[in-house]
Amino acid sequence: MKSAIVVFPGTNRERDMAIALKRVTGKAPAMLWHRDTSLPDVDLVVLPGGFSYGDYLRCGAMAAHSPIMAEIRSFAQKGGHILGVCNGFQILTETGLLPGALLRNANLRFLSQDCHLRVERTDTPFTHKWEKGAVFRTPLAHGDGNYTADAQTLERLEGEGLVAFRYAGADGTVRAEDATTNPNGSINSIAGIISENTRICGMMPHPEDLVDPLMGGEDGLPLFEGLMEAFVR
Image (cartoon, rainbow, N blue to C red; front, side):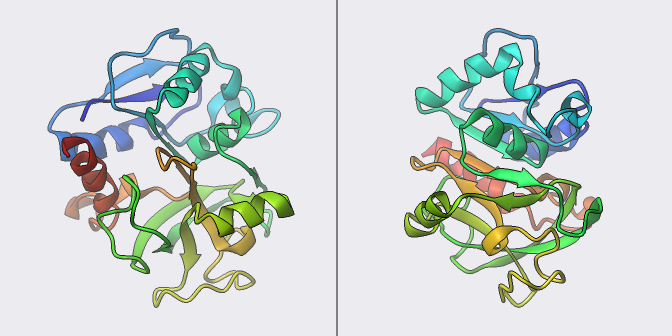
């Protein structure tokens, strides 16, 4: 699997993502600067976490207009695989590559803590290493992670099974109104979604930060192992 990570001014999670990708591929991903106007021959493009452009205007709004994004849109139209984590998820919604928006956390505070995610479907490149309903621990760190969408979009997401991950308790219980299990107040406890063709995934928590025992666990590793297996097949 050949991968690349896009770096914007203010990105700060590219090294974490590189560690995760190298763990499963054995080679370092390409690092792309936001002003680049072409993509190398890759299977996967990752938009990592951070604070692109200092989160001015709206999180991800300015990054959505960076020169590299025209190539990423084209990459998506050709069926390329894209993973957006945290600020990367925000950028994907700002570009329209994924629906919805990320608002300020319900408690209006920046959150930095572990959470638990429940896997909602397993027939995607990003989730197939888990069983449906599996629960895993992962860190989150954001001030604008409160996922929302209009009623029609939400109905489509739920009806077509486009929710990949939900915030949940350690036992897998989803309680959208409970801040202990849905810390940022996301509608329907949505933590991550996928595109209709299952090749684009956006999520707020950081699975790349739990891919090695030295990090405190390997709970996020199945996402990256699954991607690797999908491309090998």
